[in-house]
Length: 415
Image (cartoon, rainbow, N blue to C red; front, side):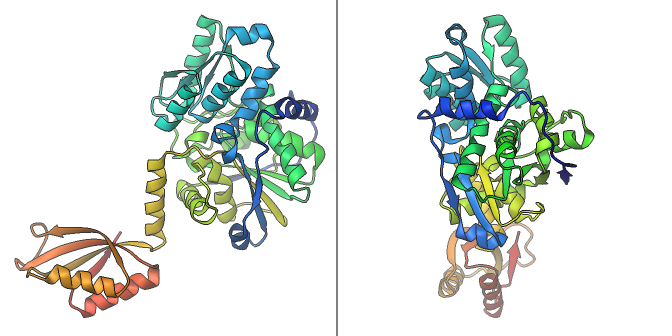
């Protein structure tokens, strides 16, 4: 599903180009100017020049320190003395914790109980107080606002605060500086603060550049809200991209998007997982689900009028290693480089050795072996052997099945 803007027009937003430029000056020397890396492989797949803005290499592994640090550095000494609180699934948490360490302010973060352990521990190591509450960001936000009232802390929204948005907008300034000829910038969307900041900066300086947002089909509150012309709250969320699991989008971002964002598209988790795997395998980069959304949108060919030069904003790289392992294994299976094959063989000594020898001669690497002698077998002298093999692809699998059948092993490819 796609949302397309009717057109772009200037409006009096609470964030201006001047605010973003001031944020860039304020953040100078305190954040990384992240690289813009061209990919030959992605360019060949897309049929145009493709480069990634690698915010996964930013301090704390995501773009979030830009907005968080801009917010805290803009605060008065009295405000810093009170301390700050935020709700986050992980990246904003780490950004705020890092900002508090740099600016000398106390930080409290309310995180979902199911947040990735690596993000929780990194937030704590950066010096923040972490409180686990609820299951999604929106529940954390309610608790954080309650604690802000009772403890006198300053609440900092992850995406609906003008000063935070101005900090995120510095990415747009950097992209235009690094690639003046860019035609389209594709940005992941959760609450919308990132795309709002980038859109304000880019459209003010280069209005010809198309700004495209992308979100998961299982967390598409932003595009639904744009189509409804009103804020929509999702009843539930279903995506592995935890960085964009937001039920209700930011009001400021929606207002900006209606005028400055050209298109918003949705991709499913299978497309996103494929993009994560491509970054690992082809780009040698660790990218989280949210950060892979722009590549998923590009490769799914949902984005129109791309132009010649396309920039993908890789928002972060804080992904759990166990999740990476599952994505890699599933991706290998889908591409035919892993196969699970059932063989029915006579239950006699040496049959497994013969089967293993045949697979070895065919160049298949055995990863797992399972025996079944008791369930679902029609003959008492038959055993079922299920083998997971590493292969060279679909053609190699077909060769294995053909040769195994000729050898009398009765093979069947299992999904």
